[in-house]
Amino acid sequence: MTTTVRESPRYIVRPPEPAALRLEHLSVWYGRHQAIRDVSFTIPARRITAIIGPSGCGKSTLLRALNRMHDLTPEARVEGSVWWGEVDLYAPSTDPVWVRRHIGMIFQKPNPFPKSVFENVAFGLRVNGYRGDIAGRVEEALRKAALWDEVKDKLHQSALALSGGQQQRLCIARAIAL
Ligand SMILES: Nc1ncnc2c1ncn2[C@@H]1O[C@H](COP(=O)(O)OP(=O)(O)OP(=O)(O)O)[C@@H](O)[C@H]1O
Ligand SMILES: [Mg+2]
Image 1 (spheres, rainbow, N blue to C red):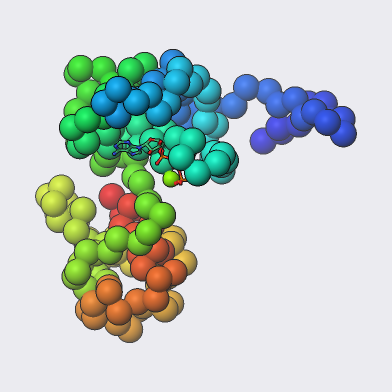
Image 2: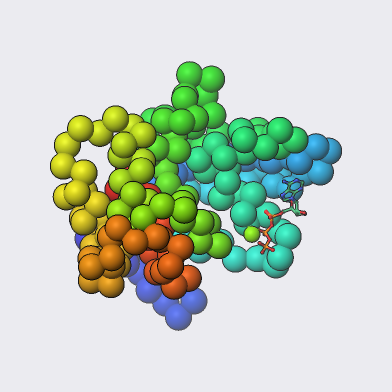
C-alpha cells in the first residue's frame, strides 16, 4: 500500500485510508461533569493510533466510549456517534453486547480471570456457544499474543501465577480469541 504522497520535513500528506472507527461529535458526561467535549476524528484501520495527554484529560473515558463500556456506569452519559463501518455503535438498534464482542479492550492493569491459562482464553468462546475446535483457537490466540511458547506447558495452571507482562498478553489473547 502506498501511503506517502508528498513528504516535507514538517508534513506527510496521506491519501484517504479505510477507517477502523469514526467519531462524530462525541461527548461524555459523568453526572454534571463533562469529561469529553465534542470530539470528532477518524481512527485509521491497520495502524496503531495513540492518544496522548495529561492525567485526567479523558483518554480512558474516550476509549471506553468506543465499545459502549459507559453503558455499565450509571452516572455516565454519551452523546454523538461512533461509526464502525456502516454501523453506528450508539444507534438504538445496536446491541452493546454485540459491540463488545467485536471491539475488544485491554486495560492498563492486567485482569485475568482466576482460572487456568487455557480457560481464560477459552472463556469468551464458551460463553458465546462456540462449537468448533476450542483448543485450536486457544493456541492460535496465544501464538498471536506472543505467549504460546511461554505457557504451552502450563495451560492448566492458574493464570494468576503468570508474571504481570504474561498476564497482560494473556488478556490480549483472550480478546483475540473472541
Ligand atoms: N467513573 C467516573 N465517575 C466520575 N468521574 C470520572 C469517572 N471516571 C473518570 N472521571 C473523571 O473524568 C475525567 C477524565 O478521566 P479519565 O480517566 O478519562 O482520564 P485519563 O486521561 O485516562 O487519565 P490518566 O492518564 O490518569 O489515566 C477526570 O476528571 C476523572 O476524574
Ligand atoms: Mg486513563
